[in-house]
Length: 81
Image (cartoon, rainbow, N blue to C red; front, side, top):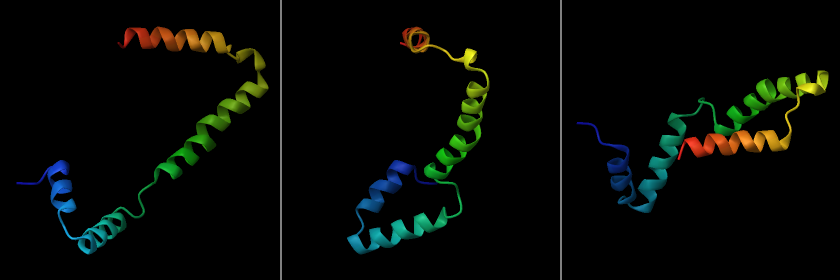
């Protein structure tokens, strides 16, 4: 039976410091090559945010006022409570 993340963590923190360091390094190395949050943010900024900004510059009438954005946010928040 596989251990849950919480069980694995509890076992891991009970190891001596040197063993924890080695385990942490090996775990980090096992995910090397996967995207990091910084890479994901950079990709999102370059694709979606940049294109939205360019579209807004091309047609400023598309802009939504701060008051409208806040009202929509508050309405959404009220329905999720």
